[in-house]
Length: 393
Image (cartoon, rainbow, N blue to C red):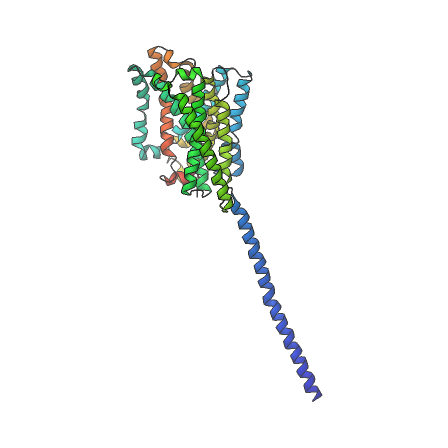
């Protein structure tokens, strides 16, 4: 009997012990899983506060697409400080940096065999831009032509900043309708106002505006200033709303706007000698460096595999090495920008003789083709091959 009772007690203790162990066995993993899940949720919540997806990489984007604004500030400081003379600055920039960036567009269009086949009408039709200027000069519309050319040139700068902003918006899934509206309105007004203010305040710039438009420039400046301040406040409130609602903040977009917009205001609203000529180089060098890096990134598709050999034609050779790309660009610069600089930038083009005005207008054709093609060839949504080359997905 004692033995039976003893055995029963041992069995009961063992049963309780096993129940306790099994309870711990299932409780501890649950506790561990809960802690892991909570940690993951916290990490996701922290990562959703900001979005940091780049076009190439954080380092490359910060150096070339955002940080290269330092080049504009450097030219600005050197020129305003009297260290860098006007003509050497403009000539060196035009031949070594600006013309190669125009050639960069040609490298992925006219020199790309597949682009010539798929965009035949666009590419050959664009050559008509060489005719537009000379014809307008012959018709006595030289002032209107050079005025419109200057407007398109500045708009092209703005449009590139807008294009980079859109790439960052797509990369960071920042595509809500409200944000698209506020981003577009803020960017366009923030770049338009300082340009109109520059024209209104600079006598040399005003001379290049047709007489029929000069009367309304001062009024337009005031209206744009009010609109810019209003949309800037609305844009800022929208960013605060996004933060409060827990929507990710698109940091690359903010950095791009913070780099480009203040630089335009500083350069366009600062008094300097020969301003109408000097600001072209100062404002555009940032644009040039951004574009060169984007093109070089895009043109890697020409050497991405053995199946590419011979497929794209001369574009493969141009983009095979950085040295080739730069050499072709500079050779093009000597052909395009040197005569254009001597003819079209050394004085008010409308003060030149009609033949020289026609020559200056003809050389604008290269820039016009670049502006126009750029508005067509970077449409990521409509051209999947561009999205693939830029690794947008």
